[in-house]
Length: 462
View 1 (spheres, rainbow, N blue to C red):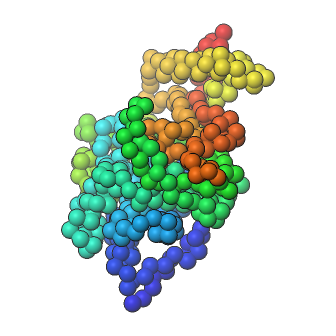
View 2: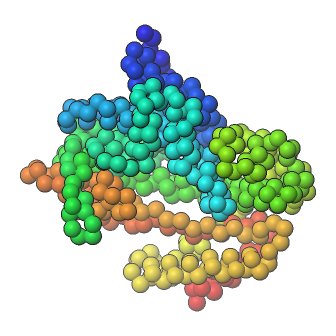
View 3: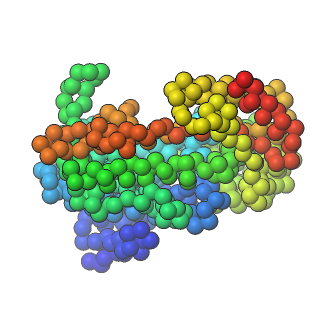
């Protein structure tokens, strides 16, 4: 039977052997409506407003994850007891794990959390699409319970085997693809990793799991051989650098804030029976979703192009927020950013000595400033927000696995055969600190609110 090929900028040729049952099924998944929708959902949302090349899609990324999962599975097959059933489940899970992402991905999920829209959660949406509907029918060609097994592996339900590490771990196929893909498509020169050496030095190890301090068993996962410590360091730092340079870029986050306010107002107006103020026709996908947010077909009808296509209509809206914010997104008239944390840190720790007491004071001042800015916005609330606040953080490395479990840490096998957490072996990794952002966005023409912002922020430092 024929070989189907996809030409990919990261992996070059990705082939699907139609004589192989799993690869034929996975290829058929690509042809399904839910998966084809991912062609219209960009991997990095609004990042193209900063990096014009960042127009790659969840569709391309998903194919890359499948290809990377096959490479990881070769390591599993060489170094562990074969389990063909679990291997097939993991490979299918790698392909379909992102199928539930909505327009602008994580920004859409923010709206969902504010409004209680469960299908805006990509994990929940993915789970439903895999277990039921067109994708489920295709996956069940592998067996009646196969679709549910795939969904369970993505959710980390059931027995945890080494094959789960291919789908979700510190060295999973998802991470190994998006790190290289996002770096390439943005043009960033940060975050290069030596993937060839990492893969050549990946081993299989049993890491302990337990409750509190008591060990109750072990879980198989990928570990690093002793020759790849420097490559592992570069991997950790590379992943970490993607956040301040790309994912947390001030303009990208600013666009996400504008989008969130825009979509929240659209849904609220429609659900309040004020469609006439929105400016969208009755049959528009956004209108249908706002009226029936629990229906999977209305969620499936949403993608980035639906939102971009709605913006010219929303510009004519009688609602001031919709008219202004749609124009801001369509024509990239983004709010200006004031970096609160940088301003506070400069006043408290001008020499960047980073004494613990100074860092604690910076955190406290930033938190108090955000609260007061939000209170000021609420007290001076008009038709259009005058300021939008933003705060987030990223931990560079979770020693001991954090809340995600032991597979989220990087274990290094010593020459003597023991497994030691990378943070204990690497001064570079142990020295990394949490990246935190605290920002406020405002219109560049609103000079009065700039005075208010600076007054509140500076007042917290005194």
